[in-house]
Image 1 (tube, rainbow, N blue to C red):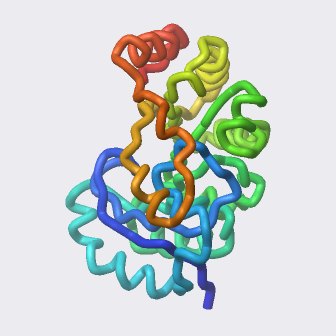
Image 2 (cartoon, one colour):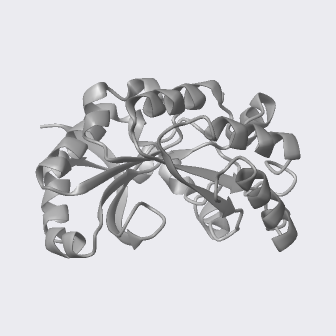
Length: 241
């Protein structure tokens, strides 16, 4: 029986894929994004070991509602690909239930996604957190190359993608950084939409609750002028954000 470490699950709409979604938040992540709004999902110790079967039992309670609402199941985190066997088996089980599946990932561990895992995934929500390698390293503690390689692999397979980009003033908003992402994304054949996500501080209390400093406490949220400028950059490459 395959088990994984899961922080929680919830019902959500709009931001986690089409329709009403049953969202499974896995626990554990290799990145340390400065703006992470769910810092408790970084660590396996804040999760619980559960079997794929037990999660399916929970999903089954909402299956009819989800189907009527045109939704599905999203595996999020944390980072689902930190637990590739659990994630793959859960996606396969959900597909067997006749529900739409989505994988929410940074792509940093994209090489752990097998072809079968991707075959059972209807949509990938891919976070491209920065384009400039130095900025990406500063924002996440990781490297951007694996994400870009994963994006290209998804495009080559024709796998539908929603691209996410978090706009943080003074951190990810540099013109060249945005331009790099927009230019790259415009070369991907299976991108359905771009979600431009303005930085917010709603997760700040969670840092205090688990004894971590929130390093962006003094960073402002993006103003309308900045958001419009970035949208225009994406639009110049044929991408609505």
